Amino acid sequence: MDCSVTHYFTVFVCPFLLVFHATVLPHVAMSQEKKMNALKELATILKDKGTPAPELWKAGGFAAAKRLKDVEQEIVKLRKTFSVETKAKGAEEERAEAEAAGVSLEELREQQKKKRDTEHQQDKRRLDDERKSGRETKLNVTKLAQGEFDLQTDYVGGDD
Image 1 (cartoon, rainbow, N blue to C red):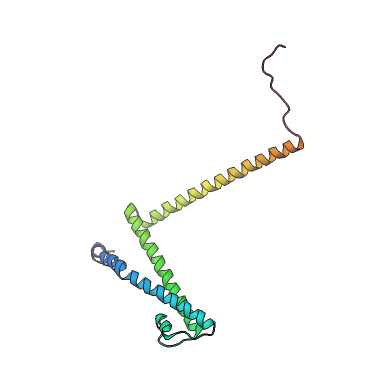
Image 2 (tube, one colour):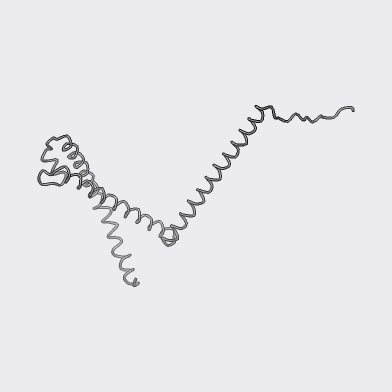
């Protein structure tokens, strides 16, 4: 990418996107949430063979009454948009985290993977140690129950 394009993007576009995300997207998300609730309510009413109110159709984003199948398709579409937005938000947060750490995105992912692997190895080692001590305890209890215990004693001082 050309340096001037990168500069233009960081100076002009990024601040605009931050303002856009901060001001416009919460309202969009709120309206999408309301729409999802309305669609769910429509679906339950239609499943029960009821007739929803016209306001509910309008809140669900439909101009006129539709079939249950259409309402369910709209719910699926809305869920997909939520999923895409969540993934995009996660990717943006990851980029910001990498930028704050002063490393590239790939390096940050590699560091996080190493950290997860180390934690996994530590958990596995701890679990193995717990199992080993449990086996030893069970073996000792079994030996004691069978009468296989150490009868040897050490005598302390005395006149021989």
